[in-house]
Amino acid sequence: MGFIEKAPKKIVWRAIEYYKQNKVIEVKEKEQGCYEGLVAGSGKTNYTVYIDTKHPKKSQCSCPFAKENDVICKHMVAVYFKINPAELDAFYDDEKSYSEDKDYRWQRDKEKLKTFARKMSKEELVDALAECWLELESYRKRDI
Image (tube, rainbow, N blue to C red):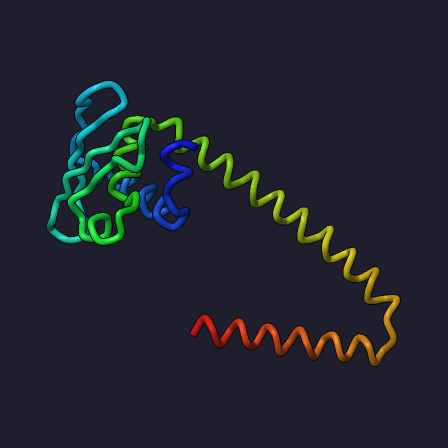
């Protein structure tokens, strides 16, 4: 599994913003596959980043998020994109493909449900719809 796949998607999207805004100030290769970088933070603080492309879990950043959560942060991923800009295009391609697959699956599943619903009585449909609404409402309350 590659460096990008180890990071949460939300982190990757934030890293893309940092990369595009040229917040990666400098990058130096320390040894093959290992880099040190300096990244401008959202405030006035700059963060020191160390990434190991072969062993992403060994990567480090001086930002509070990375230190507290022991995860790959946006600063690390921004440095990774700086040294591997082609990976950004690959990420976009993967996201586009996933989105298209998701749309296809959504339409396919919708058609299956419509076929199933057409075989139900009006009373069964009303009951099923009420259960769906109640379940949806319970999910919404959890997100608040």
